[in-house]
Amino acid sequence: MTKTKTSPYDTAEYLKTEEDMALYFEACLEEAGDDPAFIAKALGTIARAHGMTQLAKDTGLAREGQYKALSGQGNPEFSTILKVVKALGLKLHGGASSITHV
Image 1 (tube, one colour):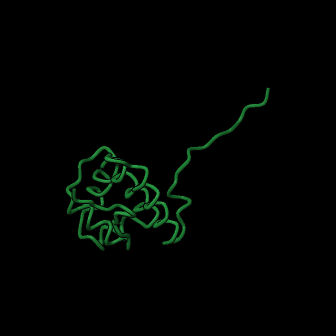
Image 2 (cartoon, rainbow, N blue to C red):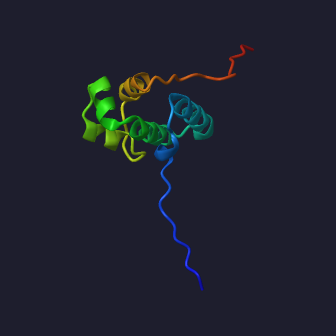
C-alpha cells in the first residue's frame, strides 16, 4: 500500500501579484456574507503574502498585533481593517448593490 504524502495548503503562497491579492479579496468579500472574522482572516492571508513586516511599517501597527487581529480569531477595530486595506492597496466596495425607497 502506497502512502500519500500531503502538505499544508497556504493560500498566501499563491498570491504572487497585486492583482492576485485584489481578486482574492473581492472573492472573499462576496463569500463572507456578514462574517467579519472571514474578512479579517482573508486580510491576514493577503498580509502574509504581502509581508507582515512591511505592512507594519505602512500601517504603524505592531506586527504581532496584526497577526492576532487578522487571524480570524481576533476582533479588530474597523479603523484597523481600514488601515490594512489601504496599506495593501485594496478597496472595499459594494458591488452591484442598490437601495430602493418605497
